[in-house]
Image 1 (tube, rainbow, N blue to C red):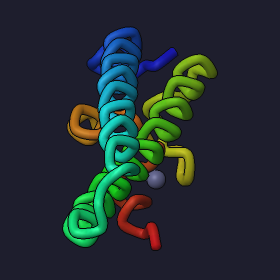
Image 2 (cartoon, rainbow, N blue to C red):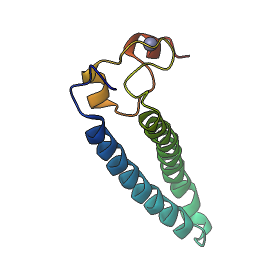
Image 3 (cartoon, protein in one colour):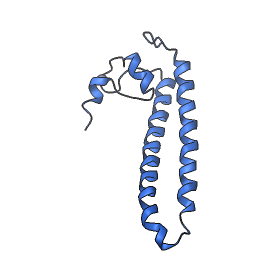
Image 4 (spheres, helix red, strand yellow):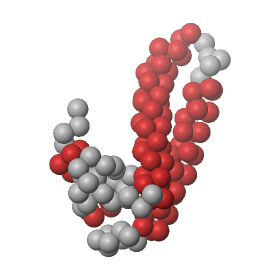
Amino acid sequence: MQANLKTPVTARKAQLFKRLQELGARLEAIEVELDSHQNRDWEDLATEREGDEVLEATGNAGLTEISQIRAALKRIEAGAYGACVRCGEPIAEARLDALPWTPLCRSCASWQP
Ligand SMILES: [Zn+2]
């Protein structure tokens, strides 16, 4: 049981699925945008390349987040959601509100390289 969680785990699950859908749609849009840049003239390329780097960075951040969300959904299935994967302490509710997919409590996250 998720004893000390005020927000029911089903609500977190819904939150995570919604975020997954948003990210999926955003990544799809980025891919379409990047593909549309394939057949341009040379003059456009330099300026467009900068934009593409931003798009790619956004895409990569999205992919990282998606894998974190999938991992969080697995922890929900395993009944381990809401506990820090490193120290086992409960993750603060406010932190889960802001980052529902986070695997770490605040003090462990600040030790991240
Ligand atoms: Zn921790």
